[in-house]
Image 1 (cartoon, one colour):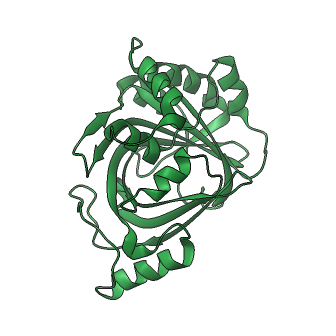
Image 2 (cartoon, rainbow, N blue to C red):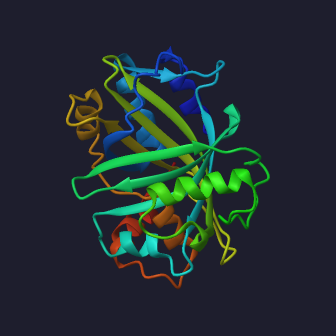
Length: 268
């Protein structure tokens, strides 16, 4: 992450994981905004008085790793590309610095609500991740993963899933003073498509996501409007696939891809 961002976020009052324990927002509405790191710096300078920055052991910028799964026919990608309002994603999400790894199913329903279910997994190394993970009943741990997926997944059966895409990024997490919302800010996004071998680096881009239950008042919304940063969908899985697999249909994402390309060409 760039030095200006580090300097700005260091000026925020801290909040610990323990203090954030009541702000899980596992059933929530999400609003995403895509901008440049330069605009993000302007936003954070304005937001400092209204937000805490998550601090883990003195570190406010966390490293994340994600491995995404899909079927051979990429049913989850296609559901999103075709505009299905009921859709799912399956991923392994690693909190690299905290040494925590989870198998997750994210479900978005036709009311715009996002529900996330997850289970802790063991033996996964995000610094040297496996590239051929599948879900078959080989032992007690993999059986537990299959049971978890069978319970929460409606798009496919566990054994039909395979690793498709890897993603790394850095995340800042902010919490408003009323502790009714979380704001995650992702930068330094990198993708590696395991099937095509292609990679994509989106350094210079920032993905802001406002997470709250219902329509709670949000200090950040006025600041985003002030800086003319508008809501914009950005699925890391779908955008990563579209950027690294030229054979995929991408009509739904073309305008977003053009905006990303334009932002990355601006002076940083």
